[in-house]
Image (tube, rainbow, N blue to C red; front, side, top):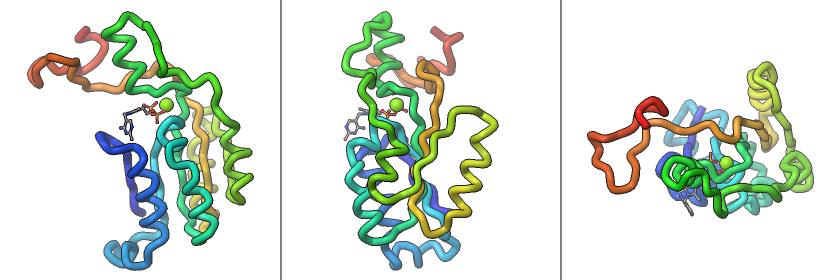
Length: 166
Ligand SMILES: Cc1ncc(C[n+]2csc(CCOP(=O)(O)OP(=O)(O)O)c2C)c(N)n1
Ligand SMILES: [Mg+2]
């Protein structure tokens, strides 16, 4: 299994790159165990390269897209919550598409995952669908924060490990 993640990355590059890994035999050969290519993304990031669903169709690349959908540009929202007293601006996503229909419109499999109990079965089903690109729309907590973080202007030794450090 090859995992491509977006942490600290350039969010367009991340998902586009997953398609490339799925597509290129030479990239596959560098990891002889690569069978399933998963990309873990957010609903904001994936929309910056959603056209790659067409590339997946054209080149028949069975990428599995794990989209963690919190209905926010989460990293931006977190800073606005902690530093700007929840004055959310341009970080909420109140006009999201139906990602299942969107995936299906491109000729792929779309799944909506709304409960904890459905997480593992959805992942197993995606792995079972070997030759298909599968878009998994996982609904997550809109205000869950990511820790640790270093606030603007603070040093690395002032890192916040959780909300108890605020
Ligand atoms: C091309 C590009 N533009 C902007 C950013 C800044 N940025 C980092 S995370 C983020 C929000 C991502 O939102 P989403 O994909 O929904 O992920 P979440 O944080 O909600 O899990 C943005 C805009 C970036 N990393 N790359
Ligand atoms: Mg998000």
